[in-house]
Amino acid sequence: MQAFRLVVEYYNYFVTIFLMVAGLYVVIARGNMIKKLVGLAIFQTSVYLLYITPGKILGGTAPILDPAFKVYSNPLPHVLILTAIVVGVATLALGLALVARINEAYGSIEEDETFERDREA
Amino acid sequence: MTTVLPHLPALQVVIPLLGAVLCALLRRPAPAFGLALAVSWLMPVIAAALLWQVIQGGPISYHMGGWAPPWGIEYRVDLLNGFVLLLVAAVGAAIMPFAWHSVGFEIDEGRRAWFYCMYLLCLAGLLGIAITGDAFNAFVFLEISSLSSYVLIALGRDRRALLASFQYLVMGTIGATFYVIGVGFLYLLTGSLNMVDIAQRLGPAWAEHPRAIVAALAFVSAGVGLKLALFPLHVWLPNAYAHAPSWVTVFLSATATKVAIYLLIRFYFSIFGVAIAFDTLPIAQIVIALSIAAMVIASLIAVFESDVKRMLAYSSVAQIGYITLGIGLANQAGLTGGLVHVFNHAVMKAALFLAIGAVFYRAGTVNLAELSGIGRKMPVTLAVFTIAGFGLVGTPGTAGFISKWYLALGALDQGWWVLVLVIVGSSLIAMVYVGRVLEIAWLREPTPAIARASDPPLPMLLPILLLGAATIYFGIDTQWSAGIAEASAQALLGGLR
Image 1 (cartoon, rainbow over the protein chains, first blue to last red):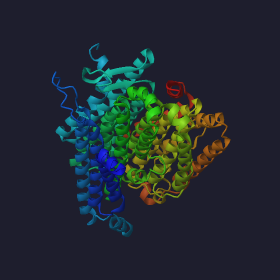
Image 2: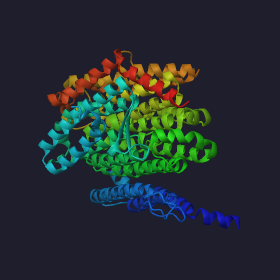
Image 3: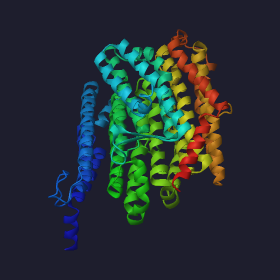
Protein backbone atom coordinates (compact mmCIF):
# COMPACT_ATOMS: atom_id res chain seq x y z
CA MET A 1 0.00 0.00 0.00
CA GLN A 2 2.85 2.31 0.92
CA ALA A 3 4.56 1.73 -2.42
CA PHE A 4 1.30 2.30 -4.28
CA ARG A 5 0.81 5.60 -2.49
CA LEU A 6 4.33 6.65 -3.41
CA VAL A 7 3.80 5.84 -7.09
CA VAL A 8 0.48 7.69 -7.25
CA GLU A 9 1.72 10.70 -5.34
CA TYR A 10 4.86 11.11 -7.40
CA TYR A 11 3.50 9.66 -10.66
CA ASN A 12 4.67 12.57 -12.83
CA TYR A 13 8.13 12.47 -11.34
CA PHE A 14 8.45 8.75 -12.03
CA VAL A 15 7.50 9.38 -15.65
CA THR A 16 9.98 12.27 -15.78
CA ILE A 17 12.83 10.17 -14.47
CA PHE A 18 12.01 7.29 -16.81
CA LEU A 19 11.96 9.58 -19.86
CA MET A 20 15.11 11.36 -18.74
CA VAL A 21 17.12 8.17 -18.31
CA ALA A 22 15.66 6.47 -21.39
CA GLY A 23 16.42 9.51 -23.57
CA LEU A 24 19.95 9.82 -22.30
CA TYR A 25 20.49 6.08 -22.80
CA VAL A 26 19.38 6.28 -26.43
CA VAL A 27 21.73 9.23 -27.07
CA ILE A 28 24.68 7.29 -25.69
CA ALA A 29 23.90 3.77 -26.88
CA ARG A 30 22.81 4.36 -30.49
CA GLY A 31 25.22 5.06 -33.32
CA ASN A 32 22.54 6.18 -35.76
CA MET A 33 22.45 9.97 -35.67
CA ILE A 34 18.67 10.24 -36.20
CA LYS A 35 18.13 7.90 -33.25
CA LYS A 36 20.54 9.97 -31.22
CA LEU A 37 18.45 13.06 -31.95
CA VAL A 38 15.27 11.19 -31.01
CA GLY A 39 16.88 10.29 -27.69
CA LEU A 40 17.95 13.88 -27.22
CA ALA A 41 14.41 15.11 -27.88
CA ILE A 42 12.99 12.63 -25.33
CA PHE A 43 15.59 13.72 -22.79
CA GLN A 44 14.66 17.39 -23.29
CA THR A 45 10.96 16.62 -23.14
CA SER A 46 11.34 14.98 -19.73
CA VAL A 47 12.50 18.33 -18.39
CA TYR A 48 9.32 19.99 -19.60
CA LEU A 49 7.39 17.60 -17.37
CA LEU A 50 9.70 18.31 -14.44
CA TYR A 51 8.88 22.01 -14.64
CA ILE A 52 5.17 21.70 -15.47
CA THR A 53 4.30 19.28 -12.68
CA PRO A 54 4.73 21.61 -9.67
CA GLY A 55 2.84 24.34 -11.57
CA LYS A 56 -0.44 22.51 -11.01
CA ILE A 57 -2.13 22.77 -7.64
CA LEU A 58 -5.18 20.56 -6.98
CA GLY A 59 -8.26 22.76 -7.19
CA GLY A 60 -6.21 25.69 -8.40
CA THR A 61 -7.50 27.89 -11.21
CA ALA A 62 -5.92 30.19 -13.71
CA PRO A 63 -4.39 33.20 -11.94
CA ILE A 64 -7.15 35.69 -12.73
CA LEU A 65 -8.13 37.54 -9.57
CA ASP A 66 -11.71 36.83 -8.61
CA PRO A 67 -13.39 36.73 -5.20
CA ALA A 68 -14.89 33.32 -6.03
CA PHE A 69 -11.46 31.62 -6.09
CA LYS A 70 -8.90 31.23 -3.36
CA VAL A 71 -6.35 28.84 -4.88
CA TYR A 72 -4.40 29.69 -8.01
CA SER A 73 -1.97 27.66 -10.08
CA ASN A 74 1.36 29.23 -10.92
CA PRO A 75 1.55 30.05 -14.66
CA LEU A 76 5.28 30.78 -14.68
CA PRO A 77 6.48 27.17 -15.22
CA HIS A 78 4.33 26.93 -18.34
CA VAL A 79 5.81 30.12 -19.72
CA LEU A 80 9.33 28.89 -19.00
CA ILE A 81 8.63 25.62 -20.73
CA LEU A 82 7.14 27.38 -23.72
CA THR A 83 10.58 28.94 -24.12
CA ALA A 84 12.29 25.60 -23.55
CA ILE A 85 10.08 23.97 -26.19
CA VAL A 86 11.15 26.60 -28.71
CA VAL A 87 14.78 25.90 -27.81
CA GLY A 88 14.13 22.16 -28.20
CA VAL A 89 12.54 22.61 -31.62
CA ALA A 90 15.45 24.77 -32.79
CA THR A 91 17.98 22.23 -31.53
CA LEU A 92 16.18 19.33 -33.22
CA ALA A 93 15.83 21.25 -36.49
CA LEU A 94 19.50 22.20 -36.53
CA GLY A 95 20.50 18.65 -35.58
CA LEU A 96 18.43 17.17 -38.43
CA ALA A 97 19.87 19.70 -40.89
CA LEU A 98 23.37 18.68 -39.81
CA VAL A 99 22.53 14.99 -40.23
CA ALA A 100 21.22 15.71 -43.75
CA ARG A 101 24.51 17.45 -44.58
CA ILE A 102 26.51 14.61 -43.04
CA ASN A 103 24.56 12.14 -45.17
CA GLU A 104 25.43 14.18 -48.29
CA ALA A 105 29.11 14.37 -47.37
CA TYR A 106 29.64 10.81 -46.13
CA GLY A 107 26.77 8.78 -47.56
CA SER A 108 26.01 7.44 -44.09
CA ILE A 109 24.47 8.57 -40.83
CA GLU A 110 26.00 5.82 -38.71
CA GLU A 111 28.59 7.34 -36.43
CA ASP A 112 31.17 4.54 -36.69
CA GLU A 113 30.84 4.38 -40.50
CA THR A 114 31.55 8.10 -40.85
CA PHE A 115 34.61 7.78 -38.63
CA GLU A 116 35.68 4.79 -40.73
CA ARG A 117 35.38 6.81 -43.95
CA ASP A 118 37.51 9.63 -42.53
CA ARG A 119 40.19 7.14 -41.58
CA GLU A 120 40.23 5.71 -45.13
CA ALA A 121 40.45 9.16 -46.70
CA MET B 1 22.76 60.70 -23.53
CA THR B 2 20.93 60.70 -20.22
CA THR B 3 18.06 58.76 -21.81
CA VAL B 4 20.38 56.09 -23.20
CA LEU B 5 22.67 55.67 -20.21
CA PRO B 6 20.27 53.85 -17.87
CA HIS B 7 19.44 51.34 -20.62
CA LEU B 8 23.00 50.30 -21.40
CA PRO B 9 22.56 46.81 -19.87
CA ALA B 10 19.70 46.05 -22.25
CA LEU B 11 21.50 47.59 -25.23
CA GLN B 12 24.53 45.39 -24.59
CA VAL B 13 22.43 42.40 -25.65
CA VAL B 14 19.78 43.96 -27.87
CA ILE B 15 22.16 45.65 -30.33
CA PRO B 16 23.97 42.45 -31.44
CA LEU B 17 20.62 40.63 -31.52
CA LEU B 18 19.11 43.22 -33.88
CA GLY B 19 22.39 43.35 -35.79
CA ALA B 20 22.08 39.61 -36.43
CA VAL B 21 18.60 40.03 -37.89
CA LEU B 22 19.79 42.91 -40.09
CA CYS B 23 22.76 40.85 -41.27
CA ALA B 24 20.40 38.09 -42.33
CA LEU B 25 18.33 40.59 -44.29
CA LEU B 26 21.33 42.23 -45.98
CA ARG B 27 22.40 38.95 -47.61
CA ARG B 28 25.55 40.47 -49.19
CA PRO B 29 28.98 39.90 -47.59
CA ALA B 30 30.36 43.45 -47.61
CA PRO B 31 27.48 45.28 -45.88
CA ALA B 32 27.04 42.37 -43.46
CA PHE B 33 30.70 42.57 -42.52
CA GLY B 34 30.46 46.35 -42.08
CA LEU B 35 27.49 45.94 -39.78
CA ALA B 36 29.17 43.18 -37.76
CA LEU B 37 32.28 45.35 -37.44
CA ALA B 38 30.27 48.37 -36.28
CA VAL B 39 28.39 46.30 -33.69
CA SER B 40 31.58 44.60 -32.50
CA TRP B 41 33.29 47.95 -32.01
CA LEU B 42 30.32 49.42 -30.20
CA MET B 43 30.12 46.55 -27.69
CA PRO B 44 33.34 47.27 -25.73
CA VAL B 45 32.29 50.93 -25.46
CA ILE B 46 29.05 49.89 -23.75
CA ALA B 47 30.82 47.26 -21.65
CA ALA B 48 33.46 49.76 -20.56
CA ALA B 49 30.78 52.31 -19.67
CA LEU B 50 29.00 49.66 -17.57
CA LEU B 51 32.18 48.62 -15.81
CA TRP B 52 33.03 52.26 -15.14
CA GLN B 53 29.57 52.80 -13.61
CA VAL B 54 30.07 49.72 -11.43
CA ILE B 55 33.49 50.89 -10.23
CA GLN B 56 32.04 54.33 -9.45
CA GLY B 57 28.73 53.40 -7.89
CA GLY B 58 28.51 49.68 -7.15
CA PRO B 59 26.44 46.96 -8.86
CA ILE B 60 23.86 47.98 -11.46
CA SER B 61 20.43 46.40 -11.36
CA TYR B 62 18.40 46.80 -14.55
CA HIS B 63 14.76 45.73 -14.55
CA MET B 64 13.88 44.30 -17.95
CA GLY B 65 10.58 45.77 -19.14
CA GLY B 66 10.15 47.65 -15.87
CA TRP B 67 9.18 44.50 -13.91
CA ALA B 68 10.83 44.52 -10.51
CA PRO B 69 12.86 41.46 -9.50
CA PRO B 70 12.39 38.72 -8.36
CA TRP B 71 9.32 38.51 -10.67
CA GLY B 72 10.78 40.25 -13.68
CA ILE B 73 14.08 39.45 -15.33
CA GLU B 74 16.88 41.41 -13.75
CA TYR B 75 20.12 42.30 -15.54
CA ARG B 76 22.70 42.67 -12.87
CA VAL B 77 26.21 43.97 -13.49
CA ASP B 78 28.81 43.77 -10.76
CA LEU B 79 32.58 43.83 -10.92
CA LEU B 80 32.89 40.17 -11.94
CA ASN B 81 30.50 40.12 -14.88
CA GLY B 82 31.42 43.66 -15.90
CA PHE B 83 34.92 42.25 -16.30
CA VAL B 84 33.65 39.25 -18.31
CA LEU B 85 31.45 41.49 -20.49
CA LEU B 86 34.37 43.75 -21.30
CA LEU B 87 36.58 40.73 -22.05
CA VAL B 88 34.09 39.17 -24.49
CA ALA B 89 33.27 42.50 -26.15
CA ALA B 90 36.91 43.59 -26.43
CA VAL B 91 38.08 40.28 -27.89
CA GLY B 92 35.22 40.38 -30.41
CA ALA B 93 36.17 43.92 -31.41
CA ALA B 94 39.89 43.21 -31.61
CA ILE B 95 39.60 40.14 -33.83
CA MET B 96 36.82 41.40 -36.12
CA PRO B 97 39.08 43.06 -38.76
CA PHE B 98 40.81 39.68 -39.18
CA ALA B 99 37.52 38.13 -40.28
CA TRP B 100 37.22 39.86 -43.67
CA HIS B 101 40.12 38.08 -45.39
CA SER B 102 39.97 34.91 -43.34
CA VAL B 103 36.24 34.38 -43.84
CA GLY B 104 36.57 35.40 -47.47
CA PHE B 105 39.17 32.68 -47.92
CA GLU B 106 37.36 29.91 -46.06
CA ILE B 107 33.60 30.50 -46.55
CA ASP B 108 31.67 30.49 -49.85
CA GLU B 109 30.38 33.89 -50.88
CA GLY B 110 26.71 32.98 -50.51
CA ARG B 111 27.20 31.98 -46.89
CA ARG B 112 29.28 34.92 -45.65
CA ALA B 113 26.37 37.17 -44.66
CA TRP B 114 24.87 34.24 -42.73
CA PHE B 115 28.22 33.73 -41.11
CA TYR B 116 28.21 37.27 -39.70
CA CYS B 117 24.57 36.85 -38.69
CA MET B 118 25.48 33.72 -36.69
CA TYR B 119 28.49 35.47 -35.16
CA LEU B 120 26.35 38.36 -33.92
CA LEU B 121 23.78 35.92 -32.50
CA CYS B 122 26.55 34.07 -30.71
CA LEU B 123 27.92 37.36 -29.37
CA ALA B 124 24.46 38.36 -28.14
CA GLY B 125 24.08 35.00 -26.40
CA LEU B 126 27.46 35.17 -24.70
CA LEU B 127 26.97 38.74 -23.53
CA GLY B 128 23.49 37.76 -22.35
CA ILE B 129 24.78 34.90 -20.19
CA ALA B 130 27.29 37.26 -18.64
CA ILE B 131 24.88 40.08 -17.92
CA THR B 132 21.69 38.35 -16.80
CA GLY B 133 20.75 37.94 -13.17
CA ASP B 134 18.12 35.32 -13.91
CA ALA B 135 19.03 31.64 -13.93
CA PHE B 136 16.50 30.62 -16.59
CA ASN B 137 17.31 33.58 -18.78
CA ALA B 138 20.92 32.40 -18.66
CA PHE B 139 19.75 29.04 -20.07
CA VAL B 140 18.02 30.76 -22.99
CA PHE B 141 21.14 32.79 -23.79
CA LEU B 142 23.26 29.67 -23.36
CA GLU B 143 21.21 27.98 -26.05
CA ILE B 144 21.27 31.06 -28.32
CA SER B 145 25.06 31.15 -28.19
CA SER B 146 25.35 27.36 -28.49
CA LEU B 147 23.02 26.94 -31.45
CA SER B 148 24.78 29.69 -33.37
CA SER B 149 28.20 28.26 -32.53
CA TYR B 150 27.13 24.82 -33.85
CA VAL B 151 26.33 26.53 -37.15
CA LEU B 152 29.61 28.47 -37.12
CA ILE B 153 31.59 25.27 -36.55
CA ALA B 154 29.69 23.39 -39.26
CA LEU B 155 30.73 26.08 -41.78
CA GLY B 156 34.29 24.69 -41.73
CA ARG B 157 35.60 23.57 -45.13
CA ASP B 158 36.40 19.99 -44.15
CA ARG B 159 33.48 17.55 -43.95
CA ARG B 160 34.75 16.55 -40.50
CA ALA B 161 33.51 19.97 -39.35
CA LEU B 162 29.98 18.59 -39.75
CA LEU B 163 30.72 15.63 -37.50
CA ALA B 164 32.45 17.87 -34.96
CA SER B 165 29.47 20.20 -34.97
CA PHE B 166 27.01 17.30 -34.53
CA GLN B 167 29.04 15.88 -31.67
CA TYR B 168 29.13 19.29 -30.03
CA LEU B 169 25.39 19.72 -30.60
CA VAL B 170 24.60 16.44 -28.82
CA MET B 171 26.95 17.09 -25.91
CA GLY B 172 26.12 20.78 -25.69
CA THR B 173 22.41 20.06 -25.57
CA ILE B 174 22.90 17.44 -22.85
CA GLY B 175 24.94 20.03 -20.94
CA ALA B 176 22.34 22.76 -21.31
CA THR B 177 19.56 20.34 -20.33
CA PHE B 178 21.48 19.25 -17.24
CA TYR B 179 21.83 22.92 -16.36
CA VAL B 180 18.12 23.51 -16.77
CA ILE B 181 17.32 20.44 -14.61
CA GLY B 182 19.55 21.90 -11.90
CA VAL B 183 17.82 25.26 -12.18
CA GLY B 184 14.48 23.41 -12.05
CA PHE B 185 15.42 21.87 -8.71
CA LEU B 186 16.44 25.27 -7.38
CA TYR B 187 13.14 26.68 -8.60
CA LEU B 188 11.22 23.88 -6.86
CA LEU B 189 13.14 24.54 -3.64
CA THR B 190 13.08 28.31 -3.54
CA GLY B 191 10.25 29.35 -5.87
CA SER B 192 12.56 31.84 -7.52
CA LEU B 193 14.73 32.15 -10.59
CA ASN B 194 16.46 35.40 -9.71
CA MET B 195 20.05 34.57 -8.75
CA VAL B 196 20.23 36.94 -5.80
CA ASP B 197 16.83 35.80 -4.57
CA ILE B 198 17.72 32.09 -4.87
CA ALA B 199 20.92 32.72 -2.91
CA GLN B 200 18.96 34.32 -0.06
CA ARG B 201 16.36 31.54 0.07
CA LEU B 202 18.83 28.71 -0.25
CA GLY B 203 20.11 29.00 3.32
CA PRO B 204 16.74 28.15 4.94
CA ALA B 205 16.05 25.53 2.23
CA TRP B 206 19.36 23.81 3.06
CA ALA B 207 18.07 22.96 6.53
CA GLU B 208 15.00 21.25 5.06
CA HIS B 209 16.11 19.66 1.77
CA PRO B 210 19.88 19.27 1.66
CA ARG B 211 19.63 16.31 -0.72
CA ALA B 212 17.73 18.22 -3.38
CA ILE B 213 20.26 21.05 -3.20
CA VAL B 214 23.10 18.59 -3.67
CA ALA B 215 21.29 17.21 -6.73
CA ALA B 216 20.83 20.74 -8.10
CA LEU B 217 24.50 21.50 -7.54
CA ALA B 218 25.51 18.24 -9.27
CA PHE B 219 23.31 18.89 -12.31
CA VAL B 220 24.49 22.48 -12.69
CA SER B 221 28.13 21.46 -12.27
CA ALA B 222 27.91 18.70 -14.87
CA GLY B 223 25.89 20.84 -17.29
CA VAL B 224 28.07 23.94 -17.14
CA GLY B 225 31.15 21.69 -16.90
CA LEU B 226 30.26 20.28 -20.34
CA LYS B 227 29.99 23.78 -21.73
CA LEU B 228 33.31 24.97 -20.34
CA ALA B 229 35.09 21.72 -21.31
CA LEU B 230 36.04 20.71 -17.81
CA PHE B 231 38.10 17.53 -18.04
CA PRO B 232 36.79 14.77 -18.78
CA LEU B 233 33.79 16.55 -20.34
CA HIS B 234 36.03 18.17 -22.95
CA VAL B 235 35.79 15.58 -25.76
CA TRP B 236 33.76 17.85 -28.05
CA LEU B 237 36.30 20.67 -27.88
CA PRO B 238 39.38 19.48 -29.84
CA ASN B 239 37.37 18.40 -32.91
CA ALA B 240 35.21 21.51 -32.84
CA TYR B 241 38.20 23.85 -32.61
CA ALA B 242 40.27 21.91 -35.13
CA HIS B 243 37.67 21.82 -37.93
CA ALA B 244 35.86 25.13 -37.40
CA PRO B 245 36.81 28.05 -39.68
CA SER B 246 39.97 29.74 -38.32
CA TRP B 247 38.22 32.87 -37.18
CA VAL B 248 35.50 30.91 -35.37
CA THR B 249 38.14 29.01 -33.43
CA VAL B 250 39.68 32.29 -32.31
CA PHE B 251 36.34 33.70 -31.22
CA LEU B 252 35.05 30.59 -29.43
CA SER B 253 38.31 29.77 -27.68
CA ALA B 254 38.58 33.30 -26.31
CA THR B 255 34.96 33.82 -25.28
CA ALA B 256 32.59 30.82 -25.19
CA THR B 257 34.39 28.69 -22.60
CA LYS B 258 35.20 31.80 -20.57
CA VAL B 259 31.56 32.77 -20.27
CA ALA B 260 30.68 29.23 -19.15
CA ILE B 261 33.40 29.49 -16.52
CA TYR B 262 31.86 32.74 -15.35
CA LEU B 263 28.49 30.98 -14.99
CA LEU B 264 30.06 28.22 -12.89
CA ILE B 265 31.78 30.77 -10.65
CA ARG B 266 28.48 32.62 -10.29
CA PHE B 267 26.70 29.44 -9.20
CA TYR B 268 29.41 28.25 -6.82
CA PHE B 269 30.17 31.52 -5.09
CA SER B 270 27.14 33.76 -5.49
CA ILE B 271 24.22 31.30 -5.51
CA PHE B 272 25.21 28.19 -3.58
CA GLY B 273 27.81 30.14 -1.65
CA VAL B 274 31.10 29.09 -0.15
CA ALA B 275 29.38 27.68 2.94
CA ILE B 276 27.39 25.05 1.01
CA ALA B 277 29.59 24.38 -2.02
CA PHE B 278 32.98 24.37 -0.35
CA ASP B 279 32.66 24.06 3.44
CA THR B 280 29.96 21.35 3.49
CA LEU B 281 30.30 19.59 0.14
CA PRO B 282 33.53 18.31 -1.44
CA ILE B 283 33.30 20.53 -4.54
CA ALA B 284 36.84 21.80 -4.02
CA GLN B 285 38.35 18.30 -3.95
CA ILE B 286 36.44 17.20 -7.07
CA VAL B 287 37.25 20.35 -9.04
CA ILE B 288 40.91 20.32 -8.05
CA ALA B 289 41.29 16.64 -8.97
CA LEU B 290 39.73 17.21 -12.40
CA SER B 291 41.83 20.35 -12.91
CA ILE B 292 45.05 18.50 -12.21
CA ALA B 293 44.00 15.75 -14.64
CA ALA B 294 43.28 18.39 -17.29
CA MET B 295 46.56 20.21 -16.73
CA VAL B 296 48.64 17.06 -17.03
CA ILE B 297 46.76 14.73 -19.39
CA ALA B 298 45.50 17.32 -21.91
CA SER B 299 48.97 18.90 -22.05
CA LEU B 300 50.52 15.49 -22.72
CA ILE B 301 48.03 14.80 -25.53
CA ALA B 302 48.88 18.21 -27.02
CA VAL B 303 52.53 17.18 -27.26
CA PHE B 304 51.65 14.36 -29.64
CA GLU B 305 49.24 16.25 -31.92
CA SER B 306 50.39 16.88 -35.50
CA ASP B 307 47.66 19.43 -36.33
CA VAL B 308 48.56 22.77 -34.73
CA LYS B 309 44.92 23.79 -34.22
CA ARG B 310 44.17 20.50 -32.43
CA MET B 311 47.31 20.93 -30.38
CA LEU B 312 46.21 24.38 -29.27
CA ALA B 313 42.71 23.02 -28.58
CA TYR B 314 44.12 20.43 -26.16
CA SER B 315 46.23 23.16 -24.68
CA SER B 316 42.99 25.08 -24.10
CA VAL B 317 41.61 22.14 -22.12
CA ALA B 318 44.76 22.21 -20.00
CA GLN B 319 44.60 25.97 -19.52
CA ILE B 320 40.94 25.73 -18.49
CA GLY B 321 42.29 23.31 -15.88
CA TYR B 322 44.35 26.19 -14.42
CA ILE B 323 41.24 28.35 -14.21
CA THR B 324 39.14 25.68 -12.52
CA LEU B 325 42.06 24.99 -10.19
CA GLY B 326 41.71 28.59 -9.04
CA ILE B 327 37.98 28.01 -8.49
CA GLY B 328 38.70 24.84 -6.50
CA LEU B 329 41.29 26.52 -4.29
CA ALA B 330 38.60 29.04 -3.29
CA ASN B 331 40.96 31.35 -1.44
CA GLN B 332 41.86 34.94 -2.23
CA ALA B 333 45.05 34.35 -4.21
CA GLY B 334 43.81 31.19 -5.93
CA LEU B 335 40.51 32.64 -7.11
CA THR B 336 42.29 35.80 -8.25
CA GLY B 337 44.64 33.60 -10.26
CA GLY B 338 41.71 31.73 -11.83
CA LEU B 339 39.87 34.92 -12.73
CA VAL B 340 42.91 36.70 -14.11
CA HIS B 341 43.71 33.58 -16.14
CA VAL B 342 40.24 33.79 -17.70
CA PHE B 343 41.37 37.12 -19.08
CA ASN B 344 45.00 36.28 -19.81
CA HIS B 345 44.23 32.96 -21.45
CA ALA B 346 41.61 34.60 -23.68
CA VAL B 347 44.19 37.13 -24.86
CA MET B 348 46.99 34.60 -25.39
CA LYS B 349 44.86 31.92 -27.05
CA ALA B 350 43.26 34.47 -29.34
CA ALA B 351 46.75 35.62 -30.40
CA LEU B 352 47.86 32.02 -31.01
CA PHE B 353 44.78 31.00 -33.00
CA LEU B 354 44.91 34.27 -34.99
CA ALA B 355 48.52 33.57 -35.92
CA ILE B 356 47.59 30.04 -36.98
CA GLY B 357 44.60 31.41 -38.90
CA ALA B 358 47.00 33.70 -40.78
CA VAL B 359 49.29 30.75 -41.47
CA PHE B 360 46.35 28.82 -42.90
CA TYR B 361 45.43 31.87 -45.03
CA ARG B 362 48.90 31.98 -46.54
CA ALA B 363 50.09 28.37 -46.51
CA GLY B 364 46.75 26.53 -46.75
CA THR B 365 47.67 24.04 -44.05
CA VAL B 366 48.06 23.83 -40.28
CA ASN B 367 49.75 20.45 -40.31
CA LEU B 368 52.95 20.74 -38.33
CA ALA B 369 54.97 18.58 -40.72
CA GLU B 370 54.18 20.90 -43.66
CA LEU B 371 55.08 24.12 -41.86
CA SER B 372 58.86 23.87 -41.74
CA GLY B 373 60.51 27.25 -42.03
CA ILE B 374 57.23 29.17 -41.97
CA GLY B 375 58.77 31.59 -39.44
CA ARG B 376 61.28 32.83 -41.98
CA LYS B 377 58.53 33.60 -44.47
CA MET B 378 55.96 35.03 -42.01
CA PRO B 379 58.27 36.56 -39.38
CA VAL B 380 55.80 38.97 -37.76
CA THR B 381 53.01 36.39 -37.44
CA LEU B 382 55.27 33.73 -36.00
CA ALA B 383 56.95 36.26 -33.68
CA VAL B 384 53.56 36.91 -32.09
CA PHE B 385 52.95 33.15 -31.98
CA THR B 386 56.26 32.81 -30.16
CA ILE B 387 55.40 35.51 -27.62
CA ALA B 388 51.94 34.11 -26.94
CA GLY B 389 53.44 30.60 -26.80
CA PHE B 390 55.84 31.77 -24.09
CA GLY B 391 52.76 33.23 -22.39
CA LEU B 392 51.15 29.77 -22.33
CA VAL B 393 54.29 28.36 -20.76
CA GLY B 394 54.18 31.14 -18.17
CA THR B 395 57.45 32.92 -18.84
CA PRO B 396 57.95 36.00 -16.64
CA GLY B 397 57.15 39.16 -18.57
CA THR B 398 54.08 37.62 -20.24
CA ALA B 399 50.48 37.54 -19.06
CA GLY B 400 50.63 33.79 -18.38
CA PHE B 401 53.19 34.28 -15.65
CA ILE B 402 50.88 36.53 -13.63
CA SER B 403 48.05 33.99 -13.44
CA LYS B 404 50.35 31.12 -12.58
CA TRP B 405 52.04 33.21 -9.91
CA TYR B 406 48.69 33.88 -8.20
CA LEU B 407 47.66 30.22 -8.56
CA ALA B 408 50.92 29.07 -6.99
CA LEU B 409 50.40 31.55 -4.14
CA GLY B 410 46.86 30.23 -3.67
CA ALA B 411 48.13 26.63 -3.52
CA LEU B 412 50.79 27.61 -0.98
CA ASP B 413 48.17 29.39 1.13
CA GLN B 414 46.38 26.04 1.44
CA GLY B 415 49.73 24.40 2.19
CA TRP B 416 49.55 22.21 -0.93
CA TRP B 417 53.05 22.65 -2.26
CA VAL B 418 52.58 19.53 -4.42
CA LEU B 419 50.11 21.56 -6.48
CA VAL B 420 52.84 24.10 -7.17
CA LEU B 421 54.94 21.28 -8.59
CA VAL B 422 51.99 20.22 -10.79
CA ILE B 423 51.63 23.80 -12.07
CA VAL B 424 55.31 23.96 -12.89
CA GLY B 425 55.27 20.46 -14.41
CA SER B 426 52.33 21.27 -16.65
CA SER B 427 54.10 24.46 -17.75
CA LEU B 428 57.13 22.39 -18.70
CA ILE B 429 54.94 20.14 -20.85
CA ALA B 430 53.53 23.30 -22.46
CA MET B 431 57.11 24.27 -23.23
CA VAL B 432 57.52 20.98 -25.09
CA TYR B 433 54.49 21.41 -27.36
CA VAL B 434 55.06 25.10 -27.99
CA GLY B 435 58.75 24.37 -28.53
CA ARG B 436 57.94 21.73 -31.16
CA VAL B 437 56.14 24.32 -33.27
CA LEU B 438 58.85 26.94 -32.75
CA GLU B 439 61.60 24.52 -33.74
CA ILE B 440 59.86 23.56 -36.99
CA ALA B 441 58.80 27.12 -37.78
CA TRP B 442 62.09 28.91 -37.15
CA LEU B 443 64.98 26.45 -37.40
CA ARG B 444 64.15 24.41 -40.50
CA GLU B 445 64.61 25.35 -44.13
CA PRO B 446 61.35 26.42 -45.83
CA THR B 447 59.87 23.83 -48.18
CA PRO B 448 58.99 24.98 -51.73
CA ALA B 449 55.30 25.09 -50.78
CA ILE B 450 56.04 27.38 -47.84
CA ALA B 451 58.51 29.56 -49.74
CA ARG B 452 55.67 31.47 -51.42
CA ALA B 453 54.05 32.45 -48.11
CA SER B 454 54.44 35.91 -46.58
CA ASP B 455 52.95 37.89 -43.70
CA PRO B 456 49.19 38.41 -44.16
CA PRO B 457 47.58 41.72 -45.25
CA LEU B 458 47.32 44.55 -42.73
CA PRO B 459 43.72 43.96 -41.50
CA MET B 460 44.82 40.47 -40.41
CA LEU B 461 48.19 41.56 -39.10
CA LEU B 462 46.92 44.36 -36.87
CA PRO B 463 44.71 42.16 -34.61
CA ILE B 464 47.60 39.70 -34.31
CA LEU B 465 49.99 42.47 -33.27
CA LEU B 466 47.43 43.99 -30.91
CA LEU B 467 46.87 40.74 -29.03
CA GLY B 468 50.57 39.96 -29.04
CA ALA B 469 51.23 43.36 -27.49
CA ALA B 470 48.46 42.73 -24.96
CA THR B 471 50.13 39.45 -23.93
CA ILE B 472 53.24 41.41 -22.94
CA TYR B 473 51.41 44.45 -21.60
CA PHE B 474 49.25 42.48 -19.17
CA GLY B 475 52.35 40.61 -18.07
CA ILE B 476 53.94 43.84 -16.89
CA ASP B 477 51.11 46.18 -15.92
CA THR B 478 48.71 44.07 -13.87
CA GLN B 479 46.89 46.92 -12.17
CA TRP B 480 43.88 46.61 -14.43
CA SER B 481 43.55 42.86 -15.06
CA ALA B 482 44.71 41.45 -11.74
CA GLY B 483 43.31 44.44 -9.87
CA ILE B 484 39.72 43.79 -10.97
CA ALA B 485 40.17 40.02 -10.57
CA GLU B 486 41.40 40.57 -7.01
CA ALA B 487 38.47 42.81 -6.09
CA SER B 488 36.01 40.34 -7.69
CA ALA B 489 37.54 37.42 -5.81
CA GLN B 490 37.25 39.35 -2.57
CA ALA B 491 33.58 40.09 -3.23
CA LEU B 492 32.87 36.45 -4.20
CA LEU B 493 34.56 34.98 -1.16
CA GLY B 494 33.23 37.55 1.28
CA GLY B 495 29.67 37.61 -0.04
CA LEU B 496 27.80 34.73 1.49
CA ARG B 497 30.03 33.10 4.01
